[in-house]
Length: 372
Image 1 (cartoon, rainbow, N blue to C red):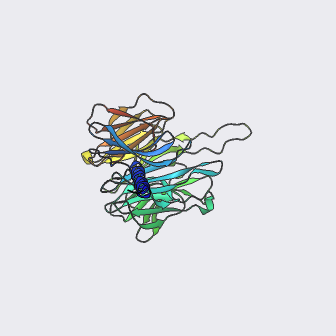
Image 2: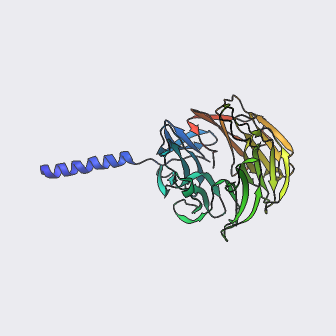
């Protein structure tokens, strides 16, 4: 063999080793749960295998430094995942730009699906993955938000529907006829909120409800079409007095509001102070799980849908002021609660008949509810 041939073969050998080192092994997990987590300044997907609740693997999404964004994750088909994050702004500039990505268990990697657009809401209908996304404009007048319909394999964006102004919590009917979302009213002072019903086929708003002084936090859609809204603050105070240095005081909310599909008010029921996130399970004729903001009760409450009758309460402990509590409904009708602090998070899978929640602890800080 000539010296030249030897070096050519050696170069190919080195290249193959390098390529092998860059590839990621497929992640295999039984009945997995997925968590969007920040660990050591990296945004990543944790894949948790059940019933052992062991960490089966991770998928790196983005380096985020000291300024982790808000984000959300959805589960597609064939081991595919949809991840979106809103970005984070420091000193008027993006420290992390918003983005929406498709990730794979087979490759343990992510690829950009919608560059420069992202948010913290992912929903799922009968036919699509749905991401509520906004662009990376720092100018409020140029900020645009859309609903992206992504194929269930999360590899293609099939359509994007523009909805403005900014939309907060969003739910979409399984048949994709209507979107319900919380948004700011831009033509009133002080700031007010409303829930809208957006006809996706017509591309227009067909019903609204004004919350007045109330500040809604999240929406949930029951199988019978009832809309539930948690009211974080019952009223907003006026602006702080700059001369006295006093801070505005918002009156805590203590109820959940219900609406028919056309947004006709359909009653309320009383809960603890500062209700935050809602999840609904079809079990037992409809069960609602509710978490609270960190300044509110340190427990999870379960209620009967429609009547709001209390069913059960699960205490959360220990608790710290900077703990975030997220809730989601799993495909088997169970609830999953995620409690996240600065350096660790815990996940519990439970139903109303459980006597207590069994917790499973992991490294990092979760930035949304776990999904499956």
